[in-house]
Amino acid sequence: MELKTVPLYAGIDLHTLHDSRHVSNRLSINLCVPLQADTVTPYALLGEILGRSSQKYPTFAALNRRLYDLYGSFYDCRVSSLGDCQVLTLMVQGIDDRFCLEKEPLLTQLADFLCDMLLCPCADQNGFDAQLVEVEKKNQRDEIAAQLNNKRAWALQRAREQVFCGQPAAIPRLGWAETLDAITPASLYSSYRRLLREASIHIIVSGSGALSQVEEPLRRRLSAITADRRPLSICHHSVPTAPEKTEQLEEMQMNQTKLVFCLAPCPPFTAQQYGAVRVAMALLGSTPFSRLFVNVREKESLCYYCDGRYNRLNGLTTIDLGLDYKDCARAEKAVMEQIQALQAGDFSDSEIEDTKKYLLGGFASMGDSLGELDPWYLAQIIEGRCQSPEQAADQVRRATREEMVTVYRSLKPILRYTLAEEQHPEKE
Image 1: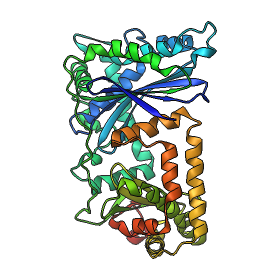
Image 2 (image 1 turned 120 degrees about the vertical axis):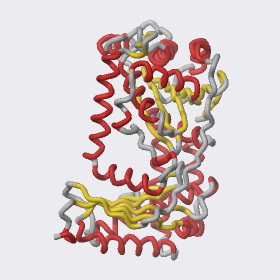
Image 3 (image 1 turned 180 degrees about the horizontal axis):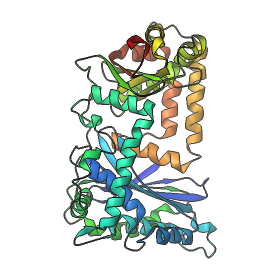
Image 4 (image 1 turned 30 degrees about the vertical axis):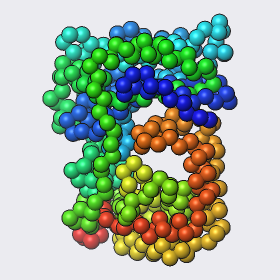
């Protein structure tokens, strides 16, 4: 599969990915802007507003009827963060034209539908519909508050905030609840117009259809926003840095302690190392037979879960565990022992091969789902390089023991963050 790119306008690119194995097509319009404190909350709110209605489909019922008419197509609008970038994604997926009863051009209709949702929201000269804005502000406030319910995700977020303090990567994806009160229907509409002006827009069309047929309708519809566009460049400036206090403890009413280790590569990994990085991190902590899972969880029974991940876009490696507070010191010792063993090259050839097979299986199956290919390529585009899953798999195959040892030796601990229950044993 080859990703083909056609520039439509300045800062607006169309990317197509054809694969005849699929029976459907997927279209996504991705508006990418730098993560900024003053825009993150309203842009996250726009994800809810644009996902609910448009001028053509002013109610949820009308929207669902239209999707039903489009052969039961699926529509979604969401906001994510990738590195230093905030992304608002509008996506629709439906069957290929050849399966339509009258062979009607469904792919073109899906492109028009997506443009309707983006370009024609429920708004007038006074801004967005006031009732809709209030409803979605409450929903976003509830969603921000609900993040506390997922203590594992919360601990990882708090750790990231410490190592990226003052940098874009520390900004939460949904913004802050306290900034929602100041948002009005008029100010939100101003934010919407700003987003259309400043976003780098990447349209990804994937599937088995004649994907090029959407170029003309997309070019025609998007011409309406090109007059005053000033797209911002997407750069990644955040660097994980050891905070002043490299060991931090926070308390919360909860039943299970969360322990997060943050490590940064020194020097930073290069694109040529990514194959070795993937194998090294998978062997460390992201497979069912990883060193952390087998030794820390299974053999020593020190935690309920443990995982190790590397984020290529912000350069941070995290190892996180859920455990009883009394086991924190022993778990830290066990984790560091495994890292030191890997840094010394104390791992077998069979471990390397098993890990590679695990990763290669994931790459091989990625093409089976348009829902996996779309975000894969979006992350590649935002990073500034377009590596296919097949190319990534080839890098994994070529990774050597020596390269993996170099990866392990580059990791430097910069923070140990603990989220503990308020009445943990040390306080009793």
